[in-house]
Length: 309
Image 1 (cartoon, rainbow, N blue to C red):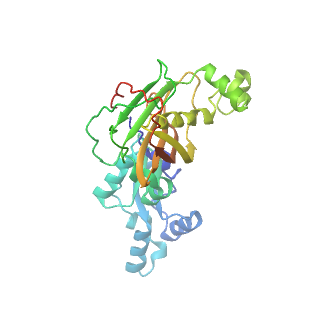
Image 2: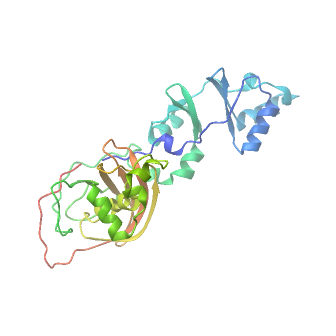
Image 3: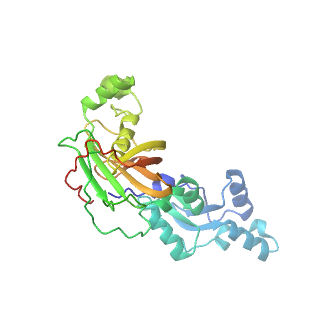
């Protein structure tokens, strides 16, 4: 199951703007004050241009008195845009096709932000490890796994991509899906001690910023551990980073997607780790380092093949 990173997750918002009749001096002062390298030029609510540090350099080079030049005189009018819901992979391709380093971000016709190569590098360096950048999928495969888990339930689902019976390799992916029930939330509260009323008290939760009860974030992140447990062999956590992007509602059916992004050495691997809802919207994003050992021979029970995703 794909879990693409979207522009609205990483863009700079709101975008800094200026009118076309603003002077170069005023625009440059705004860039300096806000520590930014570009301004979107807006006229009566419509995007009409963009000025960047390269444009300012051109004015300084070519004009004897650049301070009073209006943005309309030297702005770039060929504005390349991207929708806020587009994936980072799509944005990178658009930047490459147009030989530019930034895109104006729209939600419909509304200006909502600006995304640059710096945003991509700063916020999501792992984008190059994810499968959204035209990496061809491996041929569909079914592999026979052994009993890595003590039991399974009928409303749990596991899908795989790229796994073989022989070895784990970069690009291999496991997606584990289960509903998060009321019992899960209350059981986790009792087991962990996280009895925050936001998760357990409806009247209390209605008065919070969420307006409703939500699932404990660590419980949502725990689905990642469940997915890792379904890789062939014995998977052992070394480290995990998580960013919580959206809350999960009780009763939702969630999917943890874990993909091997790097074989570090020996039995150590790096993975991208996401949790998405039924619509594919990312709730949690992260990265993990794990050790994957050979399973012990004791009690090796071969199960039917995991279907390819």
